[in-house]
Image (tube, rainbow, N blue to C red; front, top):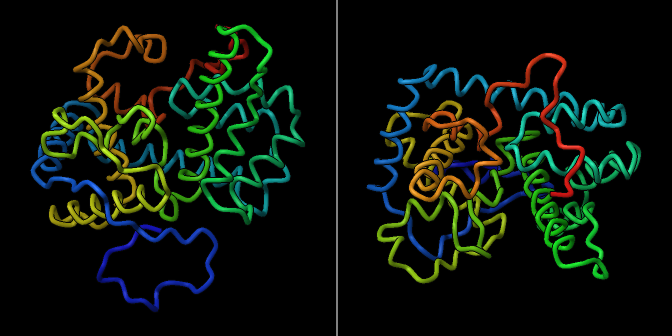
Amino acid sequence: MLWFKKQPNSAITEGEADLIIPAELSVPLDARQFQQRFSALSHIAEEDAGIDAFLASLEAKHKLFSNLLNQDVIEQLTMDGVEALLETVFSARRRVYPAFSAMGIAATTDAIRELLYGKSALLDRLNHFSEIVQINDAADKETRKIAAKNRRAAFDFGAELLHFNDPIKYPLMTRWVWDQNTVSGALREFIRGNDTLPDVPLGNSPEMFEGARTWLAAQLAEQGLYKDVHYWVDLVQAQAYAEYFRSMAEGMLSADFGRASGPADHIKKFLGIDSPAKEGLSRVRRDVSA
C-alpha cells in the first residue's frame, strides 16, 4: 500500500492481506532524473488535454475495474465485462481474450478472483494467472514463441487488474514499468548513467515495485503533490518509458501503437487511457496466431 515514511505504525493493519512493505532499492534512483521526467510530463500534458484530464481518465479506469471486480459483484462478471476491461489496457494485453474465451466465463471468473483475492503469495498468483495461456511444448518453434508472448501479456493484464482494481494498495507491476529479464523499463530511466550499466539488479518482487513507488511519491511530495499520488506515479513512469520508447526504433512496436505519434499518445497507450474504439467496434484481438 502506498505510504510515506512519516505514516504512523498504527496505520498498518496487522495481518492485512497483501500488505506490501516497500523494499530498499538495490540501485538508487536519482532526483535529478525524476525532475527531468516530471517537467516533461507537465509540458506534455499542457500541450494535450491537461494533467487533470489524464488524472480523470485514470480514475475512470479504476471505477470501471472496481465496479466489475470488487468482491461483492465479481460473481456477476460476463465475457462482455472481460472485453470491456481489455479495451482499457495497453494494446498488447488484448491478445489474451482467446484464452478467456476458451476457458468460459466461470473459469475466467475463478482465475481473476484467485488473482485478486487469493491467499497465496502475490507474485505466485500473478505467475499462476499468466498460465491461463497454454504453451504446447510439442508445437513448432514459432507457435511456442507466440504463446510465450501471449503468456507475458497475460501477466501484464493481471498486473493491471490488481493495480486498477485497487490502485492505492497495489503498485503497477507491468513489464514496461520494470522487466528484470530484459533489464529494461521505466524505472531504469530514473537511474543516473543508466545507459552505461551492464546490469540493474532491481529484481521483480512486489516489494521492489512498492519501494520504487514510495520513492517516486516522495519526489512528488517535494513538488507539493499529495492528492492522487498513485496516479501521478503512473503518469511519470509512463512519461519516462515513452521517452525511452521514442529513442528506440519505433517500428519494433508499431503494431501495438497504430497511428500514435506524439508523446501524449504514447503515455495514454501505456496506461490504457487512449481514445476508445468507435461505437460498435472492438480492439480486442480474437485471433492471436500472429
